[in-house]
Length: 448
Ligand code: C2G
Image: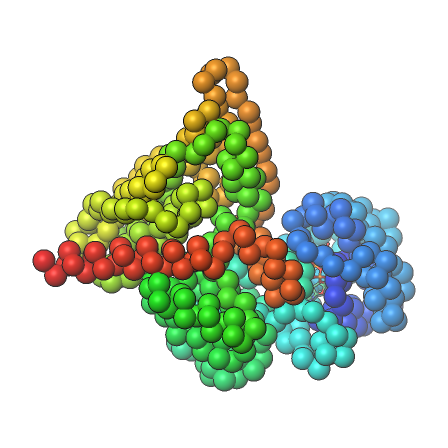
């Protein structure tokens, strides 16, 4: 008798799960299915699992494919289960290809092709809340997005659109999703859109996505003009859709904790904010060669301005930019200074000059400091006049951190709008206004 084993969360049970179990059963005579516990999913960084364990087990049982159902509680259990149950074949979806090759020494490992399309009919029948994500753009951030989305229950990356068909196909093959060159086909296959295309294309893509009735998660900077941001938010609201700017720092738990403490009065009244983020890029990179949309402020400005807007608000009295330019005249290092009625802020970002990445918040009773990479906040300290008194705070930051914004985006779509405070619409509008102000200044500089 050939014994097969497979594992999964099987949350919001769908067609992909069903087809996987069906083919797993067909590989042998006896199928054991391991269903993950909440604690194990939490430990492996999976967010947002909705169905309780009993429901997930029941859904697996109802398929009739499992001869035995066990629970998966910890890392390393697969190895011991294989020995314990005398397993011949371990199988899992091809989205895990390569991850379980280490089990080859103990049994055969089979990666079954992941189901690319979860049909709307099945979702309707099951009244499921799974949101099928369509991606626009295939750059570096898009590559990070797919594995992060896999760790958020309730979403499934369905396909990718890129007007450059070859890029779309290459990306889709890599992540086993569908490639679309036709926009209408793309929009009819997805429920929500994630935009990771070049900055200057965001406005049009957001608008078209909203016109097609899709919620939108757009990479920062969402748009580069205040009026565009206002128009798009207004349009989304009129149509009952969510438009959400993805600045991962805003949604990560460590940054929320830092803001909570800063605003609690522990360090008194906040009077000064300093933030710096530099990331050296190759001279020939798009970021350092695109004359209009390249440069450090457009690339990294959203991160460093974020804590200023969160702590001092949007009503600055004055803003000033000082820039160091590279050979092509492009901004390789920019310092932005803000004056507020009750405080000052200085934020720095650079693609061609390296500096100490740090977030410092100074108050009338003490200060807080988070070292690089503070934009993926995991640790910060609170200091006081008495230098022996130091309070230390830590928080987890899982993977590339995009899973937090995806999870919050999903909450908002599902009507739990309590996450809007992490990055409000008016803060996104203010960010667009600051980008616009910077670009106008660059234009003036180039004209002179
Ligand atoms: N799956 C699939 N097609 C989809 C979605 C999922 O074939 N569109 C497969 C997955 O590859 C996995 C199984 O269905 O084999 C269960 O998927 P999940 O519930 O998402 O569980 P997962 O996080 O993949 O856990 O120890 C746990 C395992 O490593 C897999």
